[in-house]
Image (tube, rainbow, N blue to C red):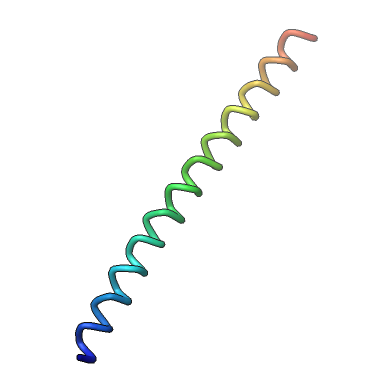
Length: 46
């Protein structure tokens, strides 16, 4: 019984980690895009 509960916990933890890393990747991507946009805007004003 205990091992089943532990497995469930591990599976939930794994899917949460997957979700969290996905969120991180998307946030990082958005930051990079915003940074590139900012650099392009700077370049066009000079």
